[in-house]
Amino acid sequence: MLKDIVNFSLKLLGFSLLLCAIHYYIYSNFYSEAVLYLPIWGIYVFNFVLVLAVYGLMNHKASTDESKVYNTFLILTIAKMALAIVFLLPLFVGKSENSTIEVINFFVAYFLFLGFEIKMLDKFLKDAQTK
Image (tube, rainbow, N blue to C red; front, side, top):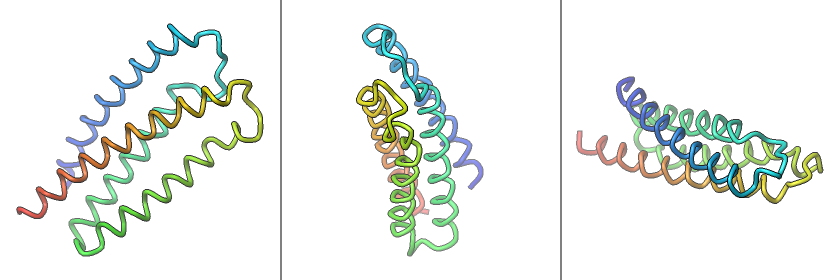
């Protein structure tokens, strides 16, 4: 179990760093005049921690009780959505001058991380079923 989490963490870290570098490049070339309330690195740390937590909990749940894995995934995804709203709350109350750019910054990264998470969990669950 720990080996799976370490392998996933390394893949997630590589994915995060690559995505963050691309994001910084696009931001600096096209939107550098926009001042952001939420830093780009903060968005990636937030998503990294949530995806790693979901994968760890799913890994634990799959090793203890495989019948509730999909229910757990659904509950954790809803919790991630709620935490995303809390994370973006300063933008909704008007603390940012460029809230549209910031929301796009967040949700592009959020959905890319979600896709990565689903792909890796699918692979993990298929491997767990064949064992």
